[in-house]
Image (cartoon, helix red, strand yellow):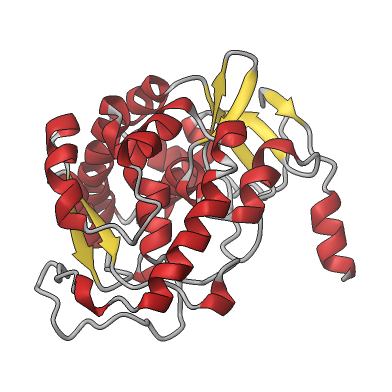
Length: 291
């Protein structure tokens, strides 16, 4: 997941005004005209991809929110989101520690970074900014089942910290909330924020022959390594969000024990037990190594 532990570079946000839970205020007047222009550029090129690639709940929420004209004012979204699923948005300076992140989710509060990337970072940045957090994450907070899953994830995250299993649980967040795919009829669509806020990886995750697309299995996901600096080499495909929620409702302690007792699975591996939708060619990985 995107937290302090994900990166070792200096954090960009202003943490001096943040509270003990890392909540801060969104100083909306501080956004510059240039940042508003950049927001519209990011939004316009990304929204154009959604009809082809995004899952239906994402498309529907984006249409309802309609925030393409300007950087969203988090306070203005609050009542609409509260009525839909009981969630609220909490402004944060950037990465926050795992414990604070889990606590916010458990209280149905989603942390949203307040700063926007620079123009030269339009295609890639290390930390999540407000475009990633809002365009990528907020739409699915309007889906009741996914919203319940995220709250449960926060509760399970606190447990994982006590059990020393945070890194195992983080793989679930990475391969679903950030980079998850889902089946819709005979098609595969994207719902993960990491690809939905990325111009290049949106199409790559669904169309490119290079990555593996494997049916979701919780234990398989929790054993699988992931990339934080490149496109994913494998994506996991849900049948529906109820499958994801049910998987997390079980007692995870026996699962953590089994995962610890087994070797890590490489991010590009395909196992005999996998339900494979697409066996990737690995062409992207080979091009990156050659180039």
